[in-house]
Image (cartoon, rainbow, N blue to C red; front, top):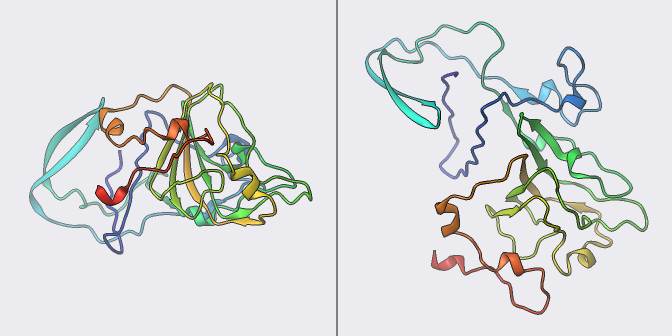
Length: 244
């Protein structure tokens, strides 16, 4: 692993961690044989920001380092500060990519979810829904069609804006649609989308190729009405978050 630190401008942050046992790469269809991103890729090397190197921290003492191995955290105590390096060799280093630099691929009719893909690993992909123009065919319906993911589950994390195909979705909500189960826009979402030209939504989607395992902590915050929220005859407003 690479030791690094992240500095935030303020404390108003929400973090979504995605861990992988394999390298996380850019999609193969956007790369040439040398690994460079091609011109039709929705982002390129200029959008990838590398770390700003700072002077070494030359300190001695006891510095606790936690190393994750086989889903366990192991404590190591260093006699010198871990940031005592003067540089690094090779091309392995942390980087950042601002999703607002992602140039969405749009079309006259609805584009399938792979156009939103940013990264891929051996058993999952990461996609991002960003501000974009809707389908511009005169008879296009911007809302996505009903579909079933045979090869993967579908997890969405809503971060900014108004997600057009869902009712009563708040920021920082998660939705899980298991593979093989048909899902699509909420009642009324398709009709509301007609005539809309643009969206300001931002959401991260993770599609794992093995079924998600739900933790006990996740079950504690489940909205039980979501699974029946496609039934028009019932009240499926989300629970009152003011009581949390």
